[in-house]
Image (cartoon, rainbow, N blue to C red):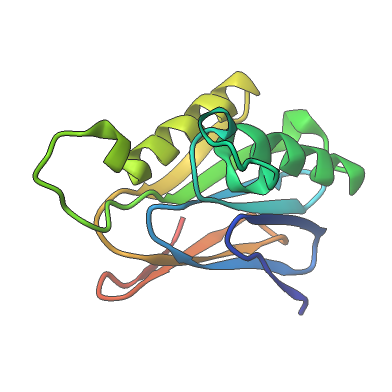
Length: 160
């Protein structure tokens, strides 16, 4: 079976059969999109919530506000229909604790919020999520059925 690895600040899509996987989600968010009818999957590994807050924003796959648009377009090129697309998200951990109350350091939480806002703006329903905590995740999206396997160290594995 075809397995396509998605790196950090990267995205990709494929039509079944195949698996999209990304490693090392800490504060980053893995956005798994799936066309439930046409068996087309897309996966993005975003690092930051907004391209508008960063000067060096050439890599649009790095940001929640720009990566999801590109990912949906990639899926449509493969034959997906936007109305059939559902989302699952994972990651957004707070990997380090800080004693100061500065929201800018809560990057995981901000990534999850930005991802949810963008999906809501595009009318893409989030059907499952595994976010938060203080541990890393690896995810695998199966293009055959849209199942998302979330693997962690010390917190087991599950399919959402």
